[in-house]
Image 1: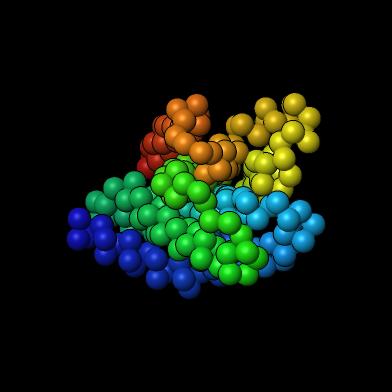
Image 2: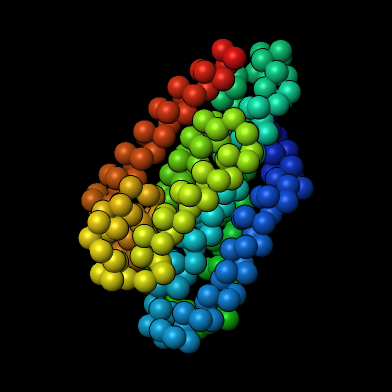
Length: 238
């Protein structure tokens, strides 16, 4: 356990030196929050009710889908993988360390938004903090698992970035954080349900716990874990 915690701390420090991680987990979400938070609350004052949830979903989705995959590509498509195998270290350790570090970064970013939104935009704190934070933890975990599939499946950074953006855009646009789902065509609403962001936003804005929201997220998480296991086996044999 001490070795694992040391690895997480080391990976966290490496992430802080990574411009991609800093941009996707901190810089862009904070800039989006500063600009769109002001626009939302000016144009639609009622958006203060769910501003924290919507900004958090954006930050988590961006940090996971765009920030995590490049780190996995750098690890498993470089000499780092060979070093793992030469020293008998399980390849899954790298995946676990990178995901754990990204989880901490996204949790910190979410905490910043939670504290800043009421001060800057008079946003309303969630009425049910337990529901909000449990939904946040699940959303981060599921989003990272889905992003891990991209990072392990794609072979180079350029393609990884392209695929990540292609997943990020519909994930946020169809989640309900930009505009109510009632304004979207039914086909788009259905498509949005394939992404963790839509279910995470629904969970964090709900008045209580619902298995109807948890089950799809668990399904995405389990499916992503299975695919990651298969991809790790393929990487190991290369």
